[in-house]
Length: 210
Length: 215
Image (tube, rainbow over all chains, first blue to last red; front, side):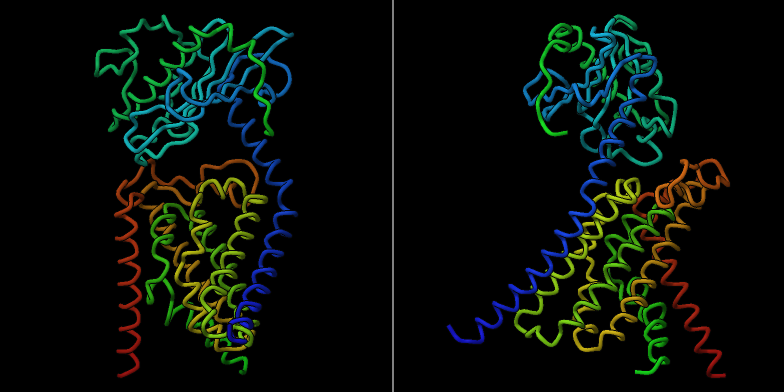
């Protein structure tokens, strides 16, 4: 080994150490703020899907994390948030993945009260075409509100389709693939809720740092 | 270097050698995030911050940086700065961070930054490098903002939508001038058209100025 190589190695190591210190210091300062932001964002994005449900405590505290295969739509991790009122179950919130979107999976949030009626559906993440498929977002159109107060029998099984396919749900101008995926995902979630109603509310919360 | 030189450096970055308009560097973030003015402003400021700091750091350490190991050192410095910027955005501008998504970490691959480190900061003093970074970064940020402004106006008929993401406060819809717009402008082809228009406009202005000088 020539002395030149050692010198270069030491220079590189010294600069790497300085850079690491810089990143570590920034992380140390920002970490609590980032954790608080994430928590606040999560609570804020979950709330609208729980319209009209009275519950106590934090929704995010009593969550179930299900790894596939779990019977819910999508083949990635599904999360169930549970809300209780006076110790008895009030509603459950499912973060699941609807497949068959125009541009990859659509992450949806489905709120279902203990009687099986939908309290709200929201889109968490999607990559659908701006101006067309993104009409599923609550901020862009009212389309997503069609699910409010619906349940497994309302409309009956055949009605859980777009009107163009003979169902009861309005289409979204310029997009049919996207809303079909969402309707299917919501219905599959309702079916899962119906089949596992007891277990959903009695299973112990998955212990994991939030 | 005199103060005249510094102003010269700024002008070079802003106009004569604008990284986006003339050198056509960093097109990936430029084309991808400029669907609204606020997105353009956010990424522009983040890039400006990283570019200025990396120029200063590369210039400050240039005595110890040997030619053979300069590239890994640039990568180290730029990657650390980008990570810090990302953490800062996540902590203080969470909504904007969500909107810009992967493009903040991707600043690290913006060739405009490594190009300035190699071409300028590694051969010039700290102050000159600072002004070079400031000029180039501002030039890039202004271009992002101009394209974002144009695409948002044409594509959505609004201006300054999602203002709250950067400056806090209540969510605002921005100034809605027309309901709906020409969708193509906010889709990817619109980004290419907008950039082409901006480059053409710059060349036109330069040519006009040259012609005026000759006569």
